[in-house]
Length: 187
Image (cartoon, rainbow, N blue to C red; front, top):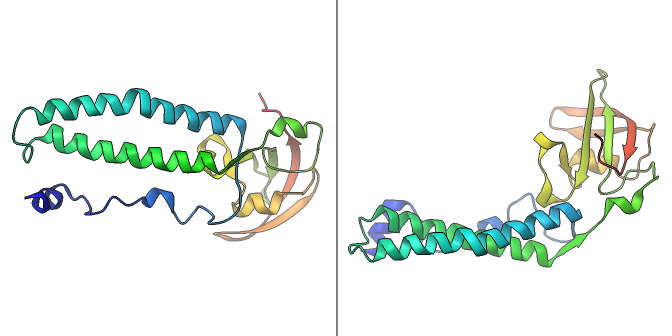
């Protein structure tokens, strides 16, 4: 019966940590992260432990008390959600254990690009773009946060304001001009 339920809800037979080894994470080396990113991960972990998980456990316990679990949607969904929460907690715990917090504020006044820098660039067409170089766990292109291991960030690291750098993008070789480097979040 258990195998039938797993087939029905399309769950794997094993509880793998696929989130722990995505291809985008480097297998060796430090897990650089800004203080804000570290705090965000810690807050997410605390929220999952103190609020989300207890709420789901309560729902699962209530659903289990209703009898037949094989056709109980609340029970099946709740168990699946608990596995997702536990997987995310293991992932965050491991990421925080290897985290190396790097405070960009320590680089104030530096015109060279290092981890945490806010960089204003212009491409070949003169289109300007601003972003911050952050840790893998903080990457969010829609908010202008790019990973320090991305091709553009790797090309920019150690360059200075006024330099022109080239890098290989998915659309081919590109050149960009570095217009401004700051370690203070622009308004």
